[in-house]
Image (cartoon, rainbow, N blue to C red; front, side, top):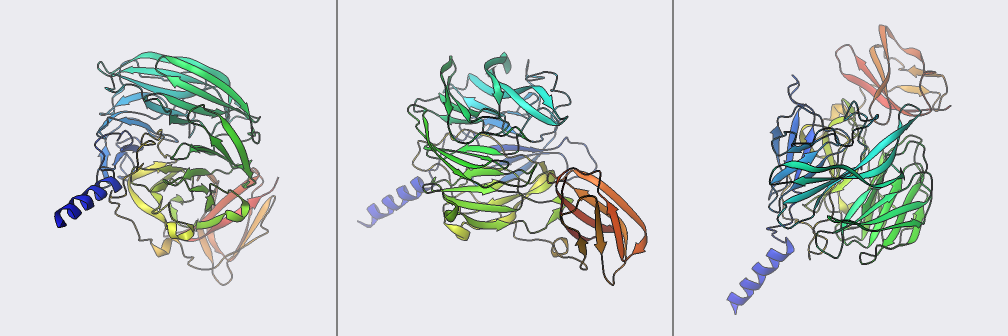
Length: 500
């Protein structure tokens, strides 16, 4: 009898961690900058989830900025990846005919201006991976110098045996699409997918049924709240892990949650939460592995929502930005579920951390958000990788036995002020005043936007207790300020709002 109990226990352990021998197509994440810089914090790195999270340096002659799409075989070995500009093999070489993907007048210089954050997917379309699909959004219009409009979706088909793109940039949807929300989900039929992509400046959403043979159906739903044109591309859309819901977060609009039918592709029962953010802000969303909770991040907060009953009353703040700078502010940018049942949150600009929600299936603060819970081998610019939910029909969609060495440490000098500073008026229009009381400051004053881009710098060459800075050249929005003394120590920092 005792032997039977042992066998049953071992079977339970195997099932509870799903001990997968296949469907590990999302087990390697590619991150980082071009290699060869003197600073070792730059360069490429791969994050692998096999049993324990391992980070490996990867020499590259290209940068991965804004997005990273990868495809592994069913054992988790990297096969292909892309930064939205070209398709690379596991050794970071451009495959034959895989250069200049979706080339157009907005393509160069890539990747700084071509990819958006939720813009491409690799899809497994054959059991033996003899053919692999790479889908990507394209652009052909620019407005206000910096705001892009995605104008369609293109298909690229890879002949894996010969490592060659045999179908390149074939358009299968041409429309003015929103910069956020493009998502892929396996259908009820193996190697076939539902694709969702919202349109721009209206409330219409495309639902496409994709197969290697082409689009079997394309339905245009008028549902929910319109996606505003202003500063598109900084939100995020996602399917729940059980495939029954689709969420769309646009910081300028708010949060929308829809019911989704995997059998028919129907979107229904739209629910809206007025979680608007600052102008030109960013944010992400991700469901818990059990699909019970939906997480949303603004630049400064991480929120948990009851996905079954999404009301303003159900919102729980589970984490906040703690003013830590890693050269740039380590605020929250976008989210991604991972094979280890955790949720990872990227930072804007080139920070060296992922924030981590350790137990996303738990309610409230018990989910345990750890700011900078994973220290990366190299700096990462905005990226959270994109994948379909390949294990959607498995009893356990992720493996909680994968070990993460949590980064619990924070350098206190990076989050505490050396001395207090009074900044006024805040909000302001043209001028901002700094009052340091008994302390005199000499050094550099820097201003960053929410993406961590430096927008203004002023150098004080003599010690001053009070000083005024002209901000008339800054646009409407939220900015960080940071004071660096002559020893290159950051002595003060904070946040201001400029009104126009």
